[in-house]
Length: 425
Ligand SMILES: [Zn+2]
Image (tube, helix red, strand yellow):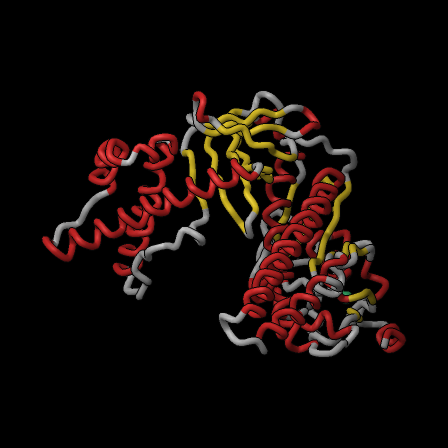
């Protein structure tokens, strides 16, 4: 049994949307009231209130305020648990000597949503390609909200929990499914072995020199986002224009996030289902900053201001790619090898003779003075991580000498023939 989370966009009609908004407001009210209670009890009598204390009061609340009943008792408990978690992490951080912020009251407009912690009180019905329906509540008061999309796990997938969220005025349902292993599996159509170097100039470079170009949103939506943010910075805070721009920026952020997720999903699925071995560097925040100037290749105006934002958004995409490759490779029975960057130094190492060839960031070509091997820098890195994938263990420590195959290839081009080195440069 595996757990998989699937998110659907909801299409409530006006009445349903209003009801959902009302429910979020009630959950928020409960959250704030529970927080208030904890604060007062502590101030007045120095007593701390536990989650259980608060859970036991829920029936009284429902008796006095019948509008809470249709929210479902488990969903209400979950909101109290959410507050409890906020307190737990607050105290944990205090204990660790940090200075965390005290759990805060939340405004209904910014309260993100609510969760059904088990399959009770809701039902997701899928109608093939026609999308589906999400039933919330029970009996006559139940809501049937239209859902777009379909998950790929089939009828054996059992729902586990549901979270309803609201973002930029749109509603989403995230369902955790318990899926049998067989239903998770992906069919692999080819058995390539590929080394990949993720970067900003090209999104990915492979060991054979082929590349995947950066997606369209890096050229269109990212500059647009920077422009809007600069425009907003010139407006007075709280003014109508400022608010309007804030809304547009939020929507564009969301659009970029959607395009990015879509792109990474497509590419990682393709990799996982065509490669028996996928090798790349492990993810370290430090690796990302090196290509911050990716956009500088076609320098436009305000390149420097845009670079910071681009870097942040692009490196988030690398994290996403790694995460997706991890589970998709497992589903397709492919092997994902993450090379130890600090030990292996893929960008500095020669893929032919395994020598370290120091380069600055600006040097885009690997030209080895030892064996004469010449390759684009990113392609060389991709080859190095692929070779690393075929050795037991990770990195140089596991392999003091180059592979036999590599040594054999490089014999004709050793230090005795320095002339080749000169040709290269
Ligand atoms: Zn070399």
